[in-house]
Image (tube, rainbow, N blue to C red; front, side, top):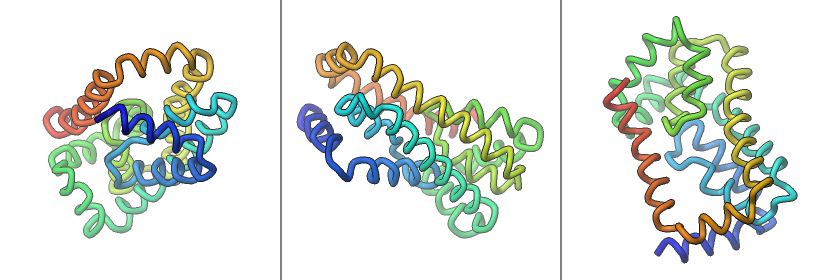
Length: 193
């Protein structure tokens, strides 16, 4: 099952429209979509290692712009769209905790949570709800998302063939681990925060 999906993703990774698709996924993930852009970032860099840093740059810029959209949802539309997104992921309790913590730790929350499997959309919407300083939000988002995506791209650029072989030999286990981390991020937010 995972092999066919992996092979399909690897074929699409070299497609001429792969970069705009990555940008769209990265934008959406920062504001409302549940799947992280790593699902496309990794195969795209493995398929086109010479473009690793361009791919990471597109992913970073689109993620920050999507983060601004998430911020706007929280700032202007929390009572409608923002509340719907939070309810969709059943994160109402986590949202209240984030709101309370933003006044004191907002910059650190953005920097740390942007690197983890914790849904970044929660951070962006919460930043808007808290009316967190927009300039600080933008530079912290650029830093945290850039570190995350450029680190992945850099490792794949440097160690591409061994990593690709490792992924292909352990595809099923790695896919399940990725899904567990993705779901775990939502669980952590729901029950820890």
